Amino acid sequence: MIIQEEIYKPSFGKPLTFFAKVISYIFHPLFIPTYIFWLLVKYFPYDFPGITNKLLGLRIFSVFWMTAFFPALAVFLLWRLKFINNIFLRTQKERIIPFFITMFFYWWMYYLSRNFGDQPKVLQFFFFGIFISTSIGVIINNYIKISLHGIAMGSALMAVILFAYYYQVNLGMLISIVTILTGIVASCRFIAGNHTNAEMYIGIFTGIFCQLFGYWFAM
Image (cartoon, rainbow, N blue to C red; front, top):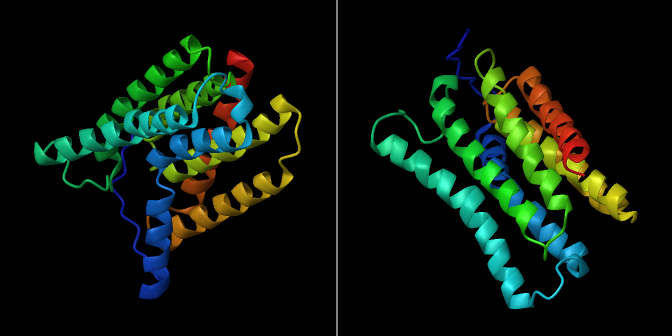
């Protein structure tokens, strides 16, 4: 097992680096499940039968609570207890425990999606896909610092494509937007000095592959 402790230094100007970091925060991997759930509410509200708008808002919040807040809180506690040196998880070693914590919450969301009959079935493959991607990611993390942003954006892109396939609707504009955003986020992670191109590409393709596998497994 090889764990590299490299930190990549940006060689771009400060304004561009600042912009890259802002984009990285907006599209943080922990936020992607909430964004995907919101897209389903926006584009396919009929697949939430019997749920009022107020309850839908609570559902979106609950997804954020389970997939973003609690994992982030766990990282904060790890930092305060000095199990990790930095809440930004800059090294491969620091990412190992957060990987497993996130895996637990993604698995829990997959379990819930199988038992809720009043929300889209596609959530089953999406949550299973991101669970598998974190499982594979923690293994790859032993060898390279795989991009978590890459995994998240690759998952989001393939999920939207699979939504279009499953519902048999034209989501060309949305797919184009997510594709562009994936490229922007990938570029920003490189500009911010967090990853090499190889680490980003491996992350993106891991996310894409795991969503395809999740669709095959769950649907």
